Image (cartoon, rainbow, N blue to C red):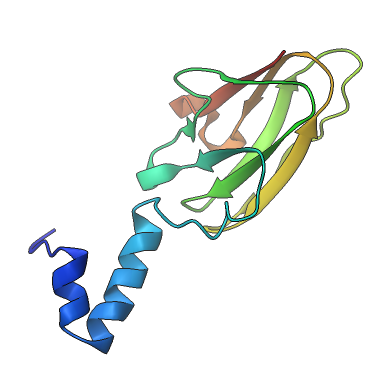
Length: 133
């Protein structure tokens, strides 16, 4: 992108700058609306238009049993397809394809390893793991 402005400089410029700052906050992954009053872990789906789950793709998300996880779509055309989970777990994922800003939550009560993918981007490495301890 072209010019870079600090939030402080944008705020000094008035209402249009405020709108721009608000838009930029959503793009930066710094938007807290999905995490306010949420006592759990947050996974970003497709942040910065990359085909990853963050955390989860590079390193597994490690949580304790009873922890809720909220997935927040940061880009469009993603889903959560469960590929493997403990035998006594019943996680169904979020199999439909969704657009940016969709959220989905699930509470993991059964310890073990969970493996999931984004079906449209599985071949591009959009896979992730959760370890429930």
